[in-house]
Image (cartoon, rainbow, N blue to C red; front, side, top):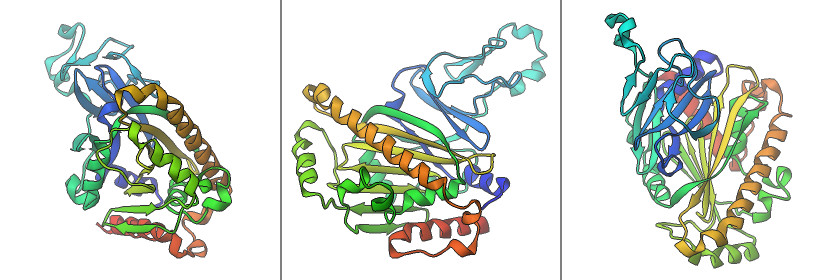
Length: 339
């Protein structure tokens, strides 16, 4: 899966976790993501979430240029707008009726896993078939999330497969993240696999840090909790990770049409807190966001050093037991290419 057409097949035929319902609470809220030289926007249209390709059907003008915000879904070029589920076209009488038959947004198909929104251009299977047993875990996580805490997006200077494989394995942690993620002193943990997902859960060896994290549990309203480090991979481009279920990093490693570029983004989703604890925990969430940013900067720095040909060369396929999720990822790629 190295050519643009093969990677586009992954984008178009699989479901992608785009956001949590709480990230777009108000009408007019939007989120824009880049994938394969195109953009997908998730938009709150008077309480209904839609996802589309960010292009006005009139002349192809981009509706939004910012990564996120709140604004009417209106084209700045000729005033075409979308609201309440319909296109609104100024001077409609100036157009031939037949020409307006295709005056609609190019939308993606949507499905929900509890409060997580998934989208796909042309999915090859139902969402529940793609998620398998991981669906229950995602549902439980979704009920913990209360809103967006941080948005971090930039291009990794490497092939998307290199960036993703880095995120999938813990073997590099003590070498690449000695002052950040390695401070948790994660144990060997346990892997779980489905056809198209993988999960790694590990305990914290840093007893002092574990005690501190347990001590703030009383300030949260959690439906479920994993008292350790939890990392979910959703084929093909998405990761969701958390420590003690107090916040979640939703990561995308979307391919670019440019060689050696990956459209990376990470959004910190905050867990629900007790009403009186919101202000108290703001510093905690800010610290989590800062730590996440540091970890991803360190990951990006090491990924830039990996040989350009590494993603496709048989020379660099040696894997340890700590890299079992990479082996699963590569098996998923092979299975996707045969289907």
